[in-house]
Length: 204
Image (cartoon, rainbow, N blue to C red; front, side, top):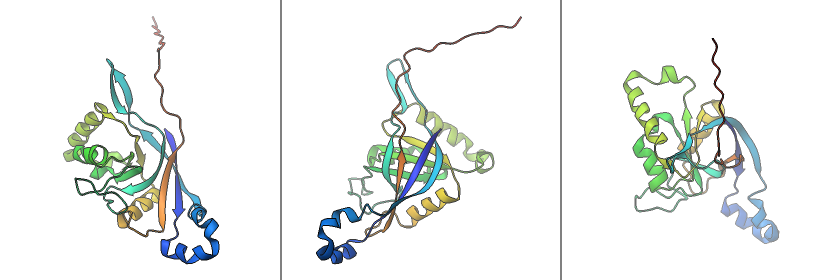
């Protein structure tokens, strides 16, 4: 389990900055980083990571320090051959109901998101129906048996995280957006465990 800090970045639109430039030119390039505060802290769980017979599987990265983006984001991104927009240097945030194998391949392989955060419902037992349980099990196997060279996290929804996701969806990185969210995980990258010691106790 990892703690994720969400920083709210208050960005002054360029039109307003340009009006101030004649008076505060030396400070103009510092102004946009002055209004930053921690909006939320929540616990997240990273996708499994392991090596088997020299092959690597799971999420290979831990550290996150990226702006958050809706999986629908296109503005403020470089449109690629898919026509959907490049997500480099962004962490894509989406709910579990939107997660599919095709969506993972779109975000990670095609749009090159630098991280993924999947928001889980508070109660998985009631939120997941019998009809899509098999689909989720198949998706779990897919995620656990491919290599993802990005941090891939899961977090249970709460009021603040739900509000952040709604704002991202309602305003998917549109030009001129004044409020943005930066997700930060400061944990160190995972290292290989060279040897494992185990003890077996038998009670007669």
